[in-house]
Image 1: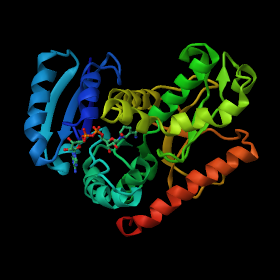
Image 2: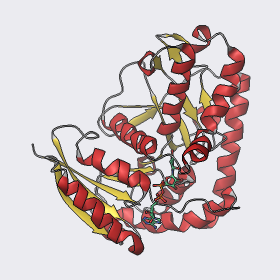
Image 3: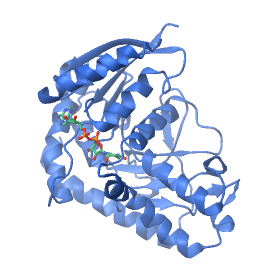
Length: 327
Ligand code: NAX
């Protein structure tokens, strides 16, 4: 057992961090033959809490857990890491608009982006902290020497939510659902695509006859699921968000089965007419060797194209809002 993967997690004392670290340390993301070193980044007031989490990680006696680094210095946290999971960010405060949140959190990602230049040459970055797509754009633009395609933002939780909704409606399990795509921004403008989805290999639109539901409630339920969870739990999604991050990593490090894909926000190369450079959620496949491709040639109805245009416009606006943070 000689493989070692170094994984940085920011916001390690937060609720997603607490749900994520134990699963990383157990070997779930990188497999049973890979040891995991954890580099935990937090702001100084939260370092004590991270120490407590580390005590618990040690108390699990995970056979695959190598060393753990705790720090408030991004240069230390990202030194030599193969993966950086950027979870830490400030939550949206009362009365705060999305634009305010973008301005508030943007500077975190300029600093962390610069420090990512110290990472390993095979670095991959997954941004979870909101607004995830634009934070990933900021980090990518500030990370000298790291190819832009290594920066992803998480839409896997949204995809998983869409799988669950389709499975429930069709009276099947999530194992019977495939090829669901989240297009665009991890926000309420995202477009969860059931037109290309399959249930037991058949088009979801053939299996679920209730097309009004597919075009309305299905979409709004997925778009607003985060808010529904806050309303019910009093706290934002945490275990399911950590699960989305684990799923994202697993999908990226393993070869995608033929005919399947998963959703991830990656730098647009212009596919499907989307503005180049914005971090846009697409259907992607991985070759399991560190490379992914955007799935080409999916058919999109005019109605779907309109939805996609809305979420693209939001991401272009967000890019304008942080133009001074981009190089
Ligand atoms: P918490 O507030 O519980 O934890 C955030 C942690 O980040 C805190 O411990 C804080 O001290 C730390 N932090 C803040 N600034 C930092 C910095 N500069 N460097 C390192 N650490 C820093 O939030 P949590 O519920 O864990 O959520 C974390 C982020 O995920 C939020 O931005 C949240 O909006 C976002 N989410 C993203 C989701 C997605 O699907 N992409 C879904 C879940 C979640 O809403």
